[in-house]
Image (cartoon, rainbow, N blue to C red; front, top):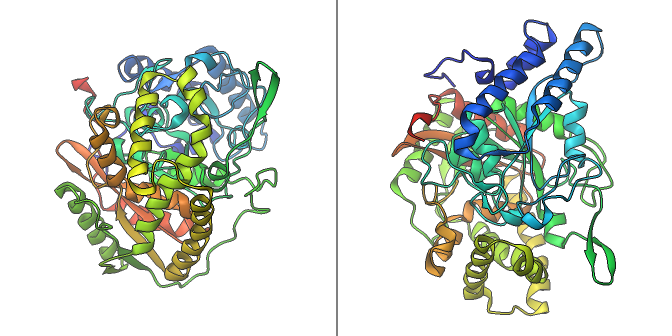
Length: 488
């Protein structure tokens, strides 16, 4: 990607560049962290993207990183590079607040596996990225940390639930951010803010975290994750470039059998010489794309064709539509037992959003789906996974929109039940993928109406390197831009 604003300050440089320069002592980690802290001080008061930034702690970690370089110690791939973590992910000594005021003091006693992996890579953890309460909205607003703005347009969502991550990246606060995704929460925010987000295959990055406990009138109990979180949720990186996303993915790949879906070893290299075929899926027949969305797909397809990919249009792919419908059954039915807790400690935004989202799901599955319907949904999911893997084989990828609309207007999901249902329909590219557990990456492909517009590339299981190659081909042919922060 050729930037129209050549990087000058340290905060503008890529993670890959920073890591190499720190390793050779061209620059120091402390100087990089100071540059990022200055950028945070300049932009974060307006964007509310990061919470709980501790400058002294980050600078102390950076100085230790510099001492390790001087001492000739073995260095990890992200040694000395600033990275943010999300408020719903355990980081020792920081609150796993989920954006809920009642959990503001819920200090984690240990690190989630993905945070441990970042530490072991040498990354300097710098700030916690904002998210909606309970991470169940495509917006990033909560009563504890406030409303995160999109650096491109404050009237538009920065995405959710990793909206703080995407907003902070686009503004230059850190070059890499950790996020998680069960309904587009990495890929959609990345697209909204013009950065790159990759959702890996389920099991590639460990979803393990220290056991969570809550106090009840009858005593403290351990919180167990529902089936969809175990089978559909993933941790993953967001970054400003495809190369940095690839680096972060490799760092975060954590063979870990504590995770019930974890794999025992990192996936090996993909076979050489596989044909490169890309099938375009523009829609599923339930919602019309806004014109700029189709233009983004066209631009990406042209870039891929120029890079030597074979492009074909698929008129229809019913299994994707069915997977998107299943998302609104399985995800929401798993969340239903949590509704009393949300009503008790959640903010008005999450209560209203869930109320309208359940109403949208009820239009498809009924007010109270039966246990038989729920079980049949899980059974059908397995069949769809097999069908898609057979379709993709070893040579095909899918190119889709990110969403049928440009980034939503802020709080669109709580403006009316009708608008909330429109959002769910428009987000079919985001919701179908988690149900199937396949990897997908979103990458910008053009600017329209002053906003970045991205596309999604879906590959077969454990083909992250292949879809990142395709994303790189798009990025290489797409001009890079920094958001016009002066309007905020």
